[in-house]
Image 1 (cartoon, rainbow, N blue to C red):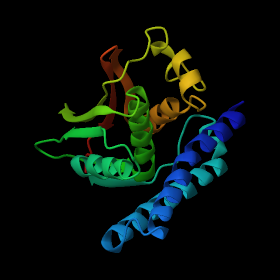
Image 2 (tube, rainbow, N blue to C red):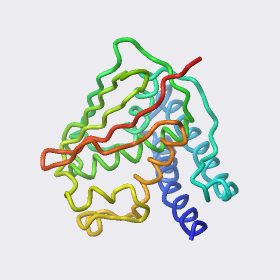
Image 3 (cartoon, one colour):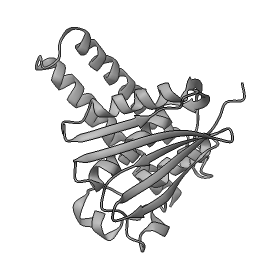
Image 4 (cartoon, rainbow, N blue to C red):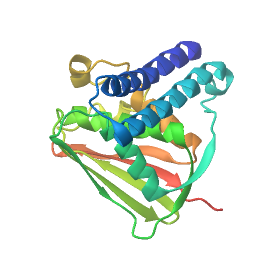
Length: 226
């Protein structure tokens, strides 16, 4: 069962970098971007290939996954820079100008020890979910707070919300609410894998609230002790 879940999970996560690399390279080939912007797109494509190599490596780390432990390569980075870079990376792949992201950074920056690829996967899953919940238009707000040496990153959307019946199960593997079954293709692995990655980094991912005005997810990460 775990082998099947691992294969399904990696397959799910591989779809995003494959799509990103294709879009980035097509933009360069078609001449849509040139000069420095083309170089930036190439760098983004290289980041996505790194993600793919990591995910393929996950297949070889099956025994670790069997106990919900994910291989990590930790890097120290400022929280404000972490959020800025990941939002820019995600935004660059979006075509809808009606979708806006507002970021409220820390006044006094902090350092966290994270795995760059894992964090990008978490951001991608949360932002994609927010986009789908709002039917591709509206405002996503990201608030960063330092709460007793624990960095909390709030992802707030203006979507229709998750039903009360579905909320207890959204972090279970392969669970998909009734609305998403018919509106969105997928295996119901984005949130469970994101929570697993957050826990592997010493943090967590939780749903703070969800109703007809929108949903708020909180990604927490421990502040670096270095």
